Image: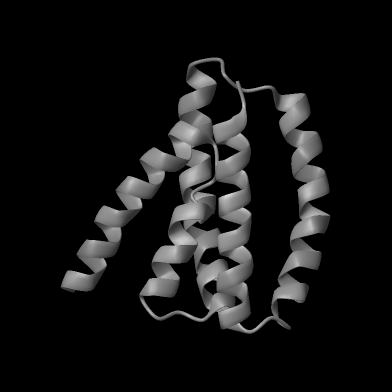
Length: 119
């Protein structure tokens, strides 16, 4: 195991805590991290989803033990998300990494502003 793999594992721990605590899935942390490490937008998003899958299953198990899961709502959102994920992946293939970084930043700033202004 290289030092980079150890570093990525430690970052995975931080992302796992952030994802499980906020419910944001970890992509909001993982994608910028992978972009910083030099990944293209497409590879960063795809790699992030693999990590998020693993983190999400673990977080689901933990939240299930605490009775914090509404399965009907989660399954309905997930079913719609399957279609959306297919469309989003195909759309991303046509977006240069530099443009993706700007779009991603605007989305994060918008989300932050929305959460900040709520009561």
